[in-house]
Image (cartoon, rainbow, N blue to C red; front, side, top):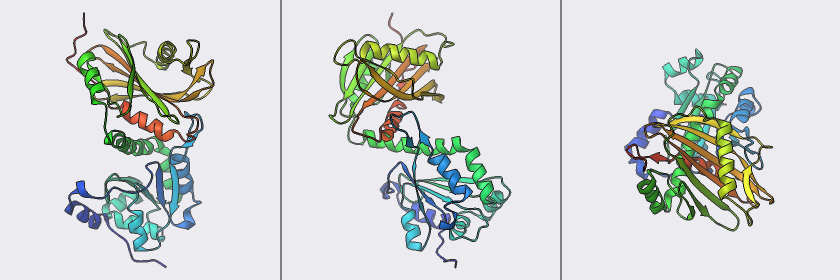
Length: 357
């Protein structure tokens, strides 16, 4: 039996924009959890399996693999339950456009007639909604002509779907990391003295400060984290810049500066586990993000790392920013890796900086 309690986007949007969005409540739930709204008869469908394989796939650049996102499946039983569902941080509504299920009817209620037709024709299938009902929210409406067609579209666009969700998550971590306070004296010093900066969380302490290498540490007994920055001037060409060069340079810097109790104990990359590197463009900078795990030579220690390598062609300068963690009692580390990924993206360089002679 079909229950009549559907909410249209137009109705909800009118309410949302009638209020000052700055004062709306924040969406609830864990930033790494997606609530997947499907009829219970579809929880073992091709679409649900494609969602598990896409949003729930495992991240292997960690000491212990973790799913990209945790998925919780729900169905719509009442209008009040639908309103509760619409209060979560991350939501996916998924159903074939012409199914007779309650969720499919709700998907149609979200879309106008022309959009419905584009879905039937296979022209569109994914409709992201950012901060639609609450602040800090990411909702995604997925629909196609059939269960098989929708599953195929999800698998074929895995990279884009995950990238969009991750962009929203990193914005959340950026807010979370710097909400309390940040070490503006450190970022100001980097900018004024060296012509670049990265935002630094509130309880990091400067440890090493050499000619072109500075490290900071956030020491907590159960969750030790540190970061370092390195730079090189007068880099006129970057034909050498690839994954191998990045990892060799990282390993060399870690061996020189990030040591254990003795000089024979130092950090290096754990190459027996996956190491992934991706290039991206940030403003005018060419960037590389490298993720993996490290271990201590001559010591029983290890953990995840995230490295950013940036090249600023306008000033011929090359930069590295790296974050690492040692927290053996903290089993799930992906949330901290995501924090590192948000922090490393705050990098900026002064386009007017003149290299000292």
